[in-house]
Amino acid sequence: MLPGKYVEVITDFNDPLELTGKIREGYLKIAWRSDSSIKISYVLTKKGRVVGSIVEDVFKKTSIEGDVAFLEIVNAIKHNLVRAVELYEANVDEILKTYPRAHVKIPQREGRDLESFLALLKNHRGEIEIQDGSKVWVLEVYKGVVKAARAIQGSTLKGDDAVREILFEMGHLLKEGKYSIQNSTEFSPEDTVRDGKLLLEGVELLKEKRRFEESF
Picture 1 (cartoon, rainbow, N blue to C red):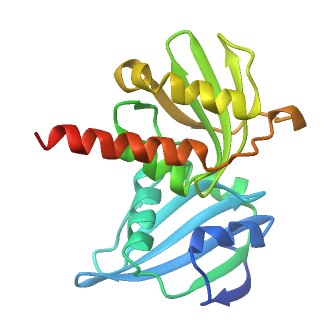
Picture 2 (cartoon, rainbow, N blue to C red; picture 1 turned 90 degrees about the horizontal axis):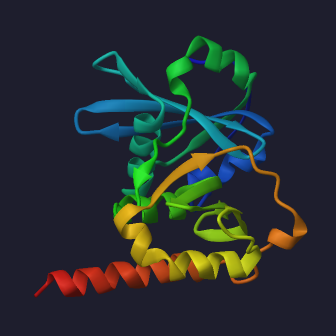
């Protein structure tokens, strides 16, 4: 059990990870049954962003931390195993000093890993960096919706133009691109994206196109 001040328990939600915005700093305690065991997890959050995660197996008395723990939590949510979420206020930096491996920073992945990119785009709340050789873009996303975007290398496009540029370069991204989670960009009003679903819809169409082509 992590240190912290209990705030409340919530049972009425669409996505437990949306509750990160309810506490300025602390964690969500999420439990679910898994086969013959019970998992208890902690999603560390700061200013609405997921910064760490831990999953404990109650019966086996084992635990996992960091990215792999976060992905297990996302998988439990995806399969509707979560029924309630407890909210706690806590000093996240102190917890991460005790559990340094709990830091969540999804490792850089190849752009051709389309399924992982879609999962990240749909579930991440925060910043994603996309690299395409000489070009680099940063996005602020929330549950599949791109809130802000801009190129930080190799281009000067911002907002919707930056998103369209990413879609235009998607063919190359699938061959040589990479993406990762970041937490260092300050976005300006000029970076605001109006058509927030454009990137998600474009990537989903690309996924369907690949599935169709592979069926032959």
